[in-house]
Image 1 (cartoon, rainbow, N blue to C red):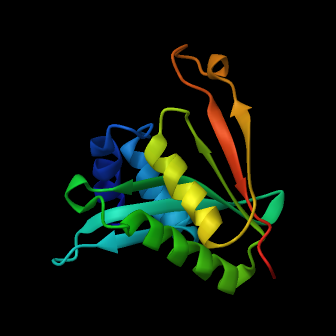
Image 2 (tube, rainbow, N blue to C red):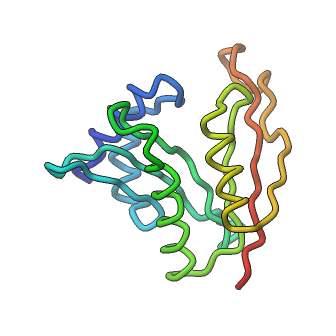
Length: 154
């Protein structure tokens, strides 16, 4: 739980992610630690994270909620390393048939991350709009495109 404040700051400073309340990051670190991962710098401070959860109606589907890397550590493949490590852990502990995430059309870094993930693991990647922009109350949100990756070999 002690990582919650740090990952909230990393998400805030990304200037790309939808920032949730600091409280939600504390809860996330408590309730979804098994489906999330944090990378630490040399002095032990969090420098990157991937948060996820298992879909209740699809217990072998990992939904990746957020991926963020502190600006000083970007461009080194850390997000891909964390995503690979998390999905390997989830697959070993409970089985994994697919990974899902949503990405806005303007988020080219996330598009590249998940497209290369599917290619690296030699699995299909399907895309479809999950939430159209007009569903969001602020009226300015871009659509959230669902990326469905898999199925993985069991």
